[in-house]
Length: 271
Image (cartoon, rainbow, N blue to C red):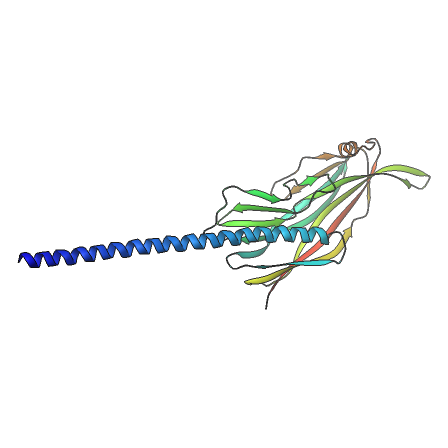
């Protein structure tokens, strides 16, 4: 009887030990797989950041020449690309006393979602800036940022307006010449073409041309306003401040030229 009890005890111990080892090996294998998958997904998300930065640079180059084009090719193995109409408008208002001029453009964004094992601790702009209205000629209209919203995302948007003082010129006004400050306002109109996502795909950029609004004449007291329909707005920019910062004469009236750069982006799946 004692020998039988020893045999049963040995068998039971062996079974328990084997079960524990199976659980340990399974847990280690699961952890290892998760670690590998997390590494792959994070690498793919980093690649997505580079893709949108590269796309923003291609768009910046294409902006300079009407009907030019370019492309960025990438893989989307662990990421999900998306073209999104935000249902928001960017509104530019030029206020001059009782007279206002208002311009609007739809705000679209190109977004890429990371895998389930990727996280973004804090929102961060990684290319461009967050200003809705800026006054430097070299400033970029594009912004690439990362954020967390039901997953990790990297996005490219053009919710910005560039307003630049370019100097003073003399214009004939019917009875003689008058000196005016000249201001150039640039807004991006980003639209979408074909959307065919795939594991391997190319994003195609096309400059469809520039739409220039008729020049408007404003007094030295004019003010520029830029806002998004979601509620965000830039600080008002007085014309006199813009001209003074450009070493011009703030007492002169101005001619304002508003231009919309029409850029179309498509995605084509690689064969």
